[in-house]
Length: 220
Image (cartoon, rainbow, N blue to C red):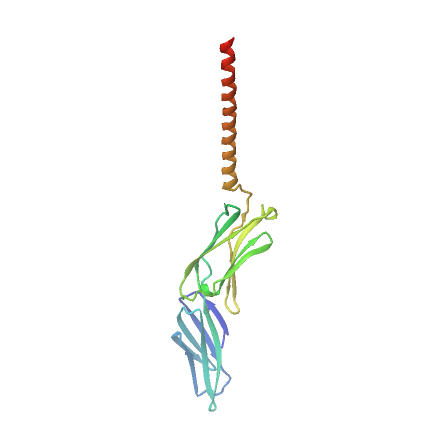
């Protein structure tokens, strides 16, 4: 069988070549669950067309009978769709943690997708979506929170995707975003309260001073 492995986008057709060295083959056929189309024959070979391939993984078996014995060969067919886009949102600081959110659009099969977040030269989070079993194009959003340290600032953050298709690996990634140093809302609120309290103290001291000065001027 040629090719022995083929990967195509969902809905495409595939041509498979089944060749043999038998001088007078008694029979040649193809067994598969996929829908078959045209068949072309020649001396020692047969071309089979498979239509509308959508199953993420399937097989086609070519059987040839020669001198009363039947032999076969197999081709594995994989349907896949790499992500249309991989988008990483700008990191958002909430309290003391940064929230990272990565969007992966129109990917198939999702069950063989791995999404990883890389900060600088290291992976800070990775998740496999093998629990997803639906056989449809899908959108995936990965959200991760982590406390950033001093060494993390000004480092690029990238969202990577990887489709592991049993022999074929398809990789994609987002545009890098630099992790910027940001002020947390909590310290800002605390600073505002402190400034307000300081203004209140100054006003109170001014009132006491004015209260003491007025009786002295009246006596004079």
